Structure formats: structure tokens, C-alpha cells
Length: 482
Image (cartoon, rainbow, N blue to C red; front, side, top):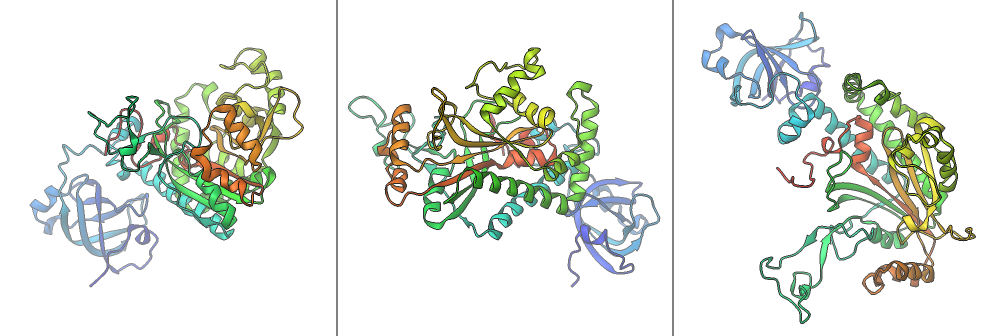
């Protein structure tokens, strides 16, 4: 029995005269003779030529856009334009019918907004074939990067009783009866009667648990789903997203920056090397999209130029304090063109400030370090010898063109007394995080780590402008379809 041939392989083949079996979905069928067939293995379609004179009319009627078909025939050199090979079909079998009048994806250009509503079918479009092939390559490259460096892949819990970021925007996990939950003497919901015996949520980060692993295994990374119940409908936010979070024992802030820069360059290069066809298509798509924007809103770099921009430059490393001075003196700030003007130390930088530093001032990726403690998380190591009133922490954010922050991390506070004092200061109960503090009680050591929002990386490498277009089934406020 002849095995099914992948279209990707046949398009490169020169074994003319070979009998082949192809299966796929009909993109178009014209002149009752030419099927453009795609099986998902390639962005390009394979032309299957039907012997319509010897094919039943019933079969011909069912060869419609969206239908799944099986064709057995001979691979021949194509004489038509647009393809080098085609299959001259001996038989065509309908595997799954599709009513062409009702099939949502007609042979025309659809808006991304429309395709978002048809997320269960959008994989069949060329654009999303490319996006999810690149997503796969990036995920594979991340695992390969850490594996080559001896890291241990650690699965941290999705259900947790702690809030790693202190943000409070978490999805609750419960089996209690919502209409009539048990209550304690004070009238509060009694979570002791819940499944886990305490209040639990979907995690926003695997970092705290990752630190436990690093303090025994040395170098670990997590790569899993995280959740944020933030009522945000922007193009940059999801309620469910994936995070990569390495943690490294005996590492400081500089080690952390080096690891993050190496990782980003590694995975971007892997995508360029292994998804050239997909990235070329997405580059062309982005160039067409840019033509519809006002000149001032257009990117100075194409997608491929942007990716090489990150590979070809050493990332500029500056402190938050240096960045504030640059921004205060910048023309957009002095001419009040920023939406958020920078007038004093301690301001939380916005995307427009981050992009200015990368795209206008340094013209290379930037790593910002040593942020004010007040705008960063409790677990970040407090810097020594700070100016009065300007306590900073050993934090770092990596800024990329067109997107702003792509990585955030820090050296962790390994000193028990400093960590406990900071937790007391901002009201984080120490007894609930006893297990985290134990790593500081028993064999504490310097360590560092960072977080990379995977979808934000995919947005950058694919050039897609909405984060909902780089995850198979996006979750956001008022939407949990499919």
C-alpha cells in the first residue's frame, strides 16, 4: 500500500512519474479540473489535475472550497504558471463534504477581526498556518536552548494559594456552591470546606516555585500556562498566556542579563533559519498592512529587518536612572509629545518611553536595570549604597523595537531579614509563604531569574499586531469561545 505523501515533500520532489496519494482540503476548484489542495504541511498549495471526463458528476459537485479529498495519481512536471509540479489524478475521493455557500472561509482576503471570530477555522488560512508554524519553532527552540545548557525543565503548579506578583488579579478555583457557600462565624466564606481547604487561584507565575527548584537543582526553567484576571481589552493582553521562567542559583544581575540576551538571540535565529518561508510571507503581510497607515505611524523596519536588528546588535545596558535623564531631555518629552510626560525619578515607564529608547535614542535593543523598589515586586534584591530616598532593586527589563518590554527579571533577594522587612512593608503575610522563606533560612545563596511572555515573543517574531492572533484560542474579557 502506498503511504500518503505530504504536499511539502511533493513540492520539492523531482520523481516525476511516481504514483502518489495526497489528502488535504480544497482551497479552490476551477474549470471543473484544477484543485488547489493544502494539507497543512506547507504554505503553498499543490495543484491536482482532475480527469473530469472520467470523473462522475456527483464527485465533481462535491469538490468545493473546504472539502477534504483524497487523490491518487502521478506526480508530473507542471507546465502551468505558479508551480513546478502537479498531480495528475487517476481517482478522487471525497473524505468530507463542505457546503461552499456556508463555508466561512471563502477564497478571498478576510480581516483578522473576522478570523478571530472563526478561530476554530482560521488555522486553514495561509497567514495562520505561518503564525502557528513559527510559534511551534519558537517553543521548540526555547526547550532546545535550555536543554543544551543543562537546565532542568520544571513543571510548576497551575493551581496555587499564593499571588507571586502581588497584583491580586487572579481567577479563583473552587468547588463550593456559588449560590450558598459555607460561611464562618464572621460571615466570610469558609474556604476550609473547599476542595483544597483554603482559597486557591490559577497561577500568575511559576517563579516562586521555580526558585525552590533552582535552590536544589541549580538551573531550572518553567514553560507553562499562566492566568491574569485583568479586565483589559487591549491588543497586548490575554487572560490566559504562556510564560518561560528560568531560575539560576549562584547567579547575579549580570548573569541574568547575559542569559536572557543569549536566549532571545538563539530563538530568533532559530526561527529565521527554520521558518524562512513563513517569515517571508509574514514580512510581506506586514508591509502591506503598513501601507494603510499614516506615514508617522509606520515602522522604520520591516519584520525581517527588525529580527536581524536584534541579532546584529549587542543589547545596550543602562540603569533606570540614566534612562530617566535621557527621557527628560528628549525632544518628545520637552515638546510634550509623550502621552505620559517624564518629570521626576520614580515614574513607571510606559511603552512609548521604552520604544523611544530602543528605536530613536540607542537604535538597538536596550536592557534597563536597577529600578525604584516602589514600582517593582517584593522578591527583587534591594541594591546596596542607594542615594537617600532612591532605593533601587537589581531588576532588569529587556526592551525591543515595536513592542517595548519583552523580558522582565531580577536578582532575587536572598537575605532573609531584608526580604521579610519588605514583605511586612507592603503587607504580604509571611506565614502563607513560609515555604518560600525557608529557602532563605536553609542554605540561602544569590540567585536570579526572569520571565518571558511567550505570546509577546511570538507577536514580535511574526509581526502580528494583536496578541490574540498568536495563540490558538485567545481568552480575554467576555470571551472564552471554543
